[in-house]
Length: 439
Figure 1 (cartoon, rainbow, N blue to C red):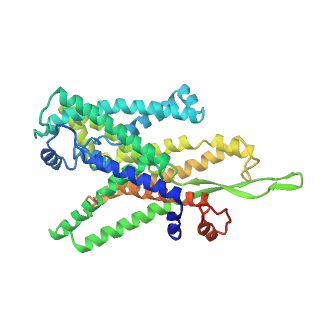
Figure 2: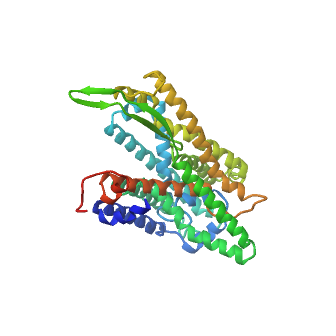
């Protein structure tokens, strides 16, 4: 990819897509600094300084810092992700919805529309709870709201719902008209914004003597190893050999070549940790907003106990790795498509046997991918404890999302360059293609 960066400015359509995605992300970041009406900005900063190390840190991470500013984008994309999870489960549970999804593009659009309706409902619930909680200063008694009451609650719910739906719309626009998955890019941009602050915190730790230069070097070496490992696994595939028989049509001979079916080790990508975080955050948010001591104790036990939280988190990641892989890969369909095209796996009978073989291979590599994702996501939490005490300001989930989204975006740019047959790009691979865009 590095040798083809010079090709990007010479392709107008790619330039438009990149600039459009960048413009949408800029709009999103500007909206993060627009506060909800009726909020005292000085008091909100003081409030969130007192809530460090709680569930609100996780909520703030996925909102890109919008929650700690009581922004109109405070709910972020998590309501949409939660709604998508619920809809995916309902599709698997109800044959009627599954039949709608299988209707092609029209069916998928209808399911997406249902997910949007669910997003509105979740936004209304979370928005109201956040408004009530802000009136009480998150239980701290700090006067965050200048004029509490039903008018504030109503305007806050409407504002937060509209803000979350606008963020959802921005993500969809980036996906359709930009480069990469828009929702993932929005989450990754919010995480990357915190990098300067994290580096500044490291410098302050060194100045105060709480961390040595050797500890800082060790931290960066460890992060480099983790990033390299993530890149290695994300680029890894299991290739199932496929053979196509020779066919004679008139005077031409077709087929007869050997190919392969590539199955990515981490098929689900960054979806499992995002889904797992969303599923943990949604009920925990409700429990945190309800002022019932017993329920608050349950929330504190889950989110302040590192072992318990990481165990739940890792378990959900493994579940969603299998769940999402089952959604995007159907061994029966893969085997049927191979049979229709005359292909077969050497030594495996076409049809049901091929489907069972693919399902077995897919299950094994999904297990490896799920353990890898869970391990990367909980690794920094382990190093933050004794005897290491390394100050990871970026969790494993953040690191995985940023690296995964970056690799996906680079891959999409590279695919775009191949598709448009950029001359220098294809010559490097020994291919020939038509000259386009006057190159």
